[in-house]
Image 1 (tube, rainbow, N blue to C red):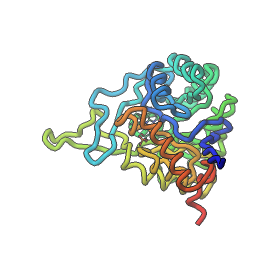
Image 2 (spheres, rainbow, N blue to C red):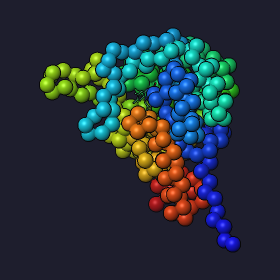
Image 3 (cartoon, rainbow, N blue to C red):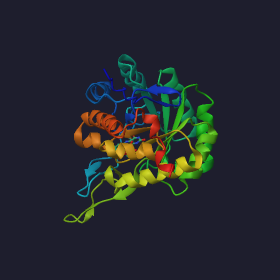
Length: 309
Ligand SMILES: Cc1cc2nc3c(=O)[nH]c(=O)nc-3n(C[C@H](O)[C@H](O)[C@H](O)COP(=O)(O)O)c2cc1C
């Protein structure tokens, strides 16, 4: 009897095999290992990225720290609240228990802190490290370093040279993102995570004041998607690196757009905040049905396909 060929959803990021291209991005999972466990059971992601961890714990900003926008998406200014370096082992351990790669996201307020955190993350058996070079709303961390090509080169070079596990560089939607990307790759980043949130603001029209306690926050979700697709497309066209696309993935269509633009995988954050971890499963099964519908057998056949016209 004629047997349908199985669809191959496997892909590789920096040599790490992942069972399908849909990961959970940084920001959904905080300091609680049991939340990572729930995410793995309910969402069946191919990998999870922790909340960005700093050397010392951070309390973050006072509420309101996140708002849902009437036009779709969120604005958040959490202020990188996180439990600090001591939380890394218990977060990573859950991934090892379930055989799902846990990637530790780190941010330092100095080069030394980036290096020390990278060494610790490897010691604590993280599969890879995501350098958060792009948080838009915390002074002295992230975006302030991540906009400067020289700084990006130095941070990626110095962290890559002290660990054996892959370094992924998460960048923001800067105008010079192609230049910054090339510096991150030159420095030794094995893949780029594109993109973090973009600065935004909302005002309460009755109170006549900004809504977020920090006034300015990071815009995520559907409004970010076309910007993220453009950046992935441009960076892939110029440099052909390994890319993980992030920004407004809410269903299989928005995920597939990233793959066609050149990403090998995607990360989901806002759609999980809105609809729970199961959205990850739905996106994966949607990708599988799409490939069948298009008479394709593997995810590799669509990565970067939008460039071939
Ligand atoms: C509440 C919230 C917290 C976030 N925290 C982090 C973080 O700690 N580190 C980081 O690199 N990105 C963080 N992000 C950004 C996301 O990882 C992602 O880049 C962005 O939200 C776009 O993806 P999305 O549209 O799927 O949400 C956060 C996003 C949200 C909404």
